[in-house]
Image (cartoon, rainbow, N blue to C red; front, side, top):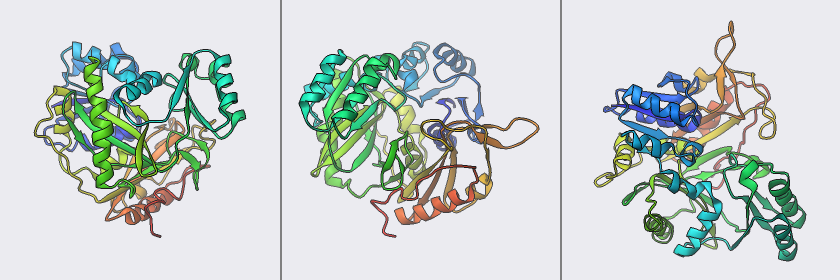
Length: 426
């Protein structure tokens, strides 16, 4: 079977690397891909949000499965268009993708289904939102309702910061139409957990938990980013806690989606805060997380194709997963100036040396080919690499990942040295 993966980052590199190992896969095509993905798949220059072009590509290539990586094309209806063309697709419909595309819909579904989450209020008028902030007298989370490239959430420590977030989103339209409405919600505290399940619309298969690190700097300081690294498994996520998440969050969410006539197909990513030992839902994503995908694929045992194909075909019965590596860690190497103004065009060197180390996979996130006559790759985005390693435990995975990071040379690059600090003993 030939498969098509949509996207061009480290998440898609990890998916192409893992799915390409399946004995049932004859070829992996990735659109648009990147130079690192080109080493394990054939890249085609069709944009991830070019719905018409992607459907035409899938038909032309006669693919048996499409796996959609990013959220934007799902919210645009790529899944519907592919299924209308008769192509099995891993990813939800446009209507189901609103679980991520509309934070208002997500919060309302949580309230209706009794899913534990922070208290919230919704505003489409800036004056009313600002009045609520002034009256609250406590820290608030300010969320733009729509997609904002992972940047539309501000955890405001005080009134001034919350008012500035409302002004930026609603008055200045920093995120365009996504900021037309905002959700203001109470701040939750505790460790954050990334939890994924794969659903066929009725059944689901639970995957391993991971923990992401959003802040730029060690000690969880500095600005929020798209993610500076992740590891799996996180110690706070005990079997008892997982059972509670499945019973109180995952199953009610999937049932509520079915009841709305929008059954969920694909990867449901639940962002959790463990507050006082109880799971609280921060948000939903309708696709695999990044950099969580890198550690999940690194740990995954055996053939991943049945999981993806079973969901796309609507039948996960009999599909199970297991984990070959006890632990994995991914450390993001970011460009100079990230996240506000990442610098592009710097040579990325040492990749072969890093990838040759035990248990290491170097996934490309934001690289482009160097301009002729130069060879190799240069930085082409904010997050440049996701350097990933497996190990017998989180400590060994960290040692291997950081040895590989140290082998990479990228002028002005940034990375955290404390990924997985919650689970590391040394």
